[in-house]
Amino acid sequence: QVQLVESGGGSVQAGGSLRLSCTVSGFAYPNRKFMAWFRQSPGKEREGIGGMDSSDDTSVADSVKGRFTISKDNASNTLYLQMGSLEPEDTAMYYCAARTRMCIGDSWKSTSNYDYWGRGNQVTVSS
Image (cartoon, rainbow, N blue to C red; front, side, top):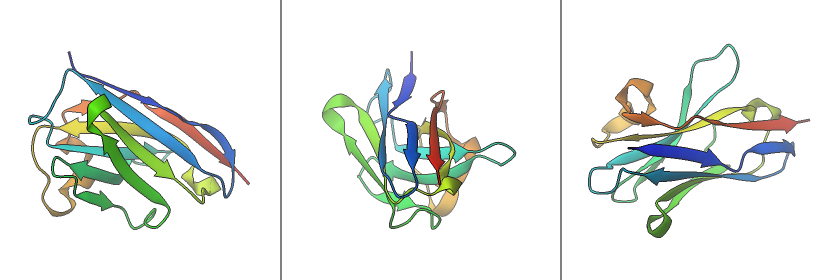
């Protein structure tokens, strides 16, 4: 059974930092081709933030480039999202997702391209 479990969210003041973790079980490489982070705030569509493929190549959305970075630890099957210089606009539920196929171009941004999702973790940034 595949499980993606996010952790590390919470409340922080603007300008602060948080690190989210996504621990994966039941879905190992080489089947796990691409993993990504998404976020969704009330009334908005789920937005792709960034992802990493099985070769450790990363893609990051322009909206968070320079503030958010993605990394992973293969030993613990964990994907990380390091968030810095947080702004109130970053307030959202953050989700981890994984898929069995490689992503081409900006296809990683489409929610329909993912096979597995975590339940989400809330991040709240106050001004």
